[in-house]
Image (cartoon, rainbow, N blue to C red; front, side, top):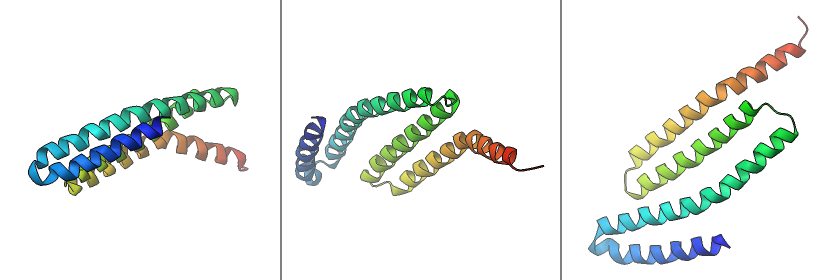
Length: 129
């Protein structure tokens, strides 16, 4: 199972970071970055399976592909923004992390507008004129 690999790598990297932090802080951050990327790559493979399942379910339910695609993009933006924000926070740059989170929220809102519009139009279609 991949979770054992992730936890093992994370524990080993954490111990190495604790040791390196006092002597070579730049190397410690580089190790944090590499560990984060390694974990992210493994997780992305799992997320791809979930995305495939969601697309398959959407096709079975005859949901417009644009909506499924938009929802998957929103989920992707959320994960990537959170990952980037955590990495920058680990580097001690919490103000930049906040900007990454804000950008992620704005991009999510931009992608959500067509879905919100369709929902409002559907609701208005049910109301008597």
